[in-house]
Amino acid sequence: MNVRYSLLGLLFVMAQVAVAQQMRCDTIFTTVNFERGYSVIDLDYKDNRSTLEGLCERLRTLSSDPGLSIDSVMVQGFASPDGLTSKNIILAEKRARNIVSYLSSVTPLPENLFSVESSGVDWEKLERMVGESAMPYRDEVLEIIRTVPVWVIRGGKIVDSRKRRLGMLHGGKPYNYMAENFFPALRHADFRTIVCMTSVITPPSVSYKSEDDSVETLSPALEASTETVVERIADEAPAETPVTSGQQTGLRKPGLLALKTNMLYDLAAVPNLGVEISFCKKYSLSVNGMYAWWSNDARHRFYRIYGGDVELRRYLGGRRLFEGHHIGAYCQMLTYDFSFGRKGIMGDKWTYGAGLSYGYSLSLSNRLNIDFSIGVGYLWGKYKKYHPADGCYVWDSTNSRKWFGPTNAEISLVYVIGGKGGSR
Image 1 (cartoon, rainbow, N blue to C red):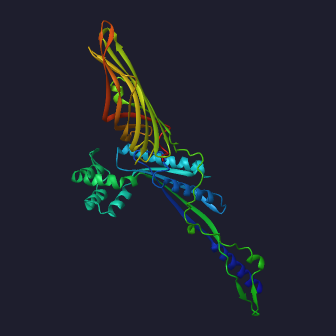
Image 2: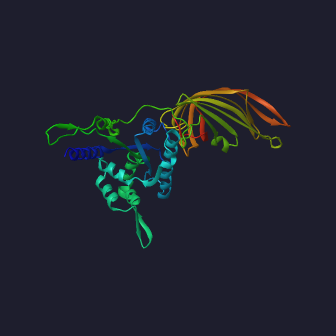
Image 3: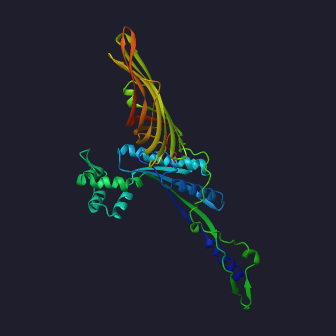
């Protein structure tokens, strides 16, 4: 009988150990935000830097633990309703793939572990945001989102859409409100993975009585075979420690240099070229030059102007390089000679100017901007009046020029070398 009870006790302990083998799982979820129309990761947009650095640090820690298992990772891309639906689906997929490229380059996770999904517009998140808000016409907006299909198809043709209904509602006021307040949060890519581990709980000691009422216990060797439970992943706080970013695929390095040409001068047949260099995050220094020498002496025509300016700028509200509102201070110098008939005006050596500027740089793409700028300041110098006669130019008088007012105007096409993806 002692043998029988010993076998039963051993089987009971084995069952306890098997039950104690538990699978503990923790879901890691992270959202990376994107600007309108962009799929390139911008670490300085919203809280992307701390989010990605914390995620990478945590993935490195989990990957180094032999007791953990990361079987698959899902990255899902989203877009806002702005733009064409087909383009939004492509844009959302690019956002997800850039997250995959970035994480596979800076963490031990191989790229084939990731799966990518493009979900287009994140209507579910928009519905939640509208429902939690006090926006105008909230109930009507929710009714459209919940009842109108993304595409209304009749007879095999698209006759209506959810986006169209929202755009037409009350003259577009609710749509414009959502575009300003909600759409930026819809431009994102979500990272989701489940990390699992096997933990072993030490079973209690098992004792039983034999027929002779003596107490017997399990052997010490069997008791020592159990292990201490490791710390649960679910109790860990998300890592926030910054990490050093290595090569980051999908993350464009910011350009510090931009080339530009003032299209107002180009229209006036004055070739020009400028260089703008960024420094100290929000400041830039630009140097611009122009040169034109057109003449037709047979008709006494003459058109000559050359010079340049230097401007120190500070960008105010743009999220990236060379973008947004800016103010500046500039100085300029130029000389000129104009003769289109019987009289001519020629600058006596150099004319100088200095002033303050204000402008706005509008982003067209990751590399192109159009920069609008106006400068008000003081211009001074001397000029000569003359008239052509018998193949010569006869001097008439020398005059002083002193002018306070607009002294600089610019509508420039700007090309940023390297792109604006990693801005301030």
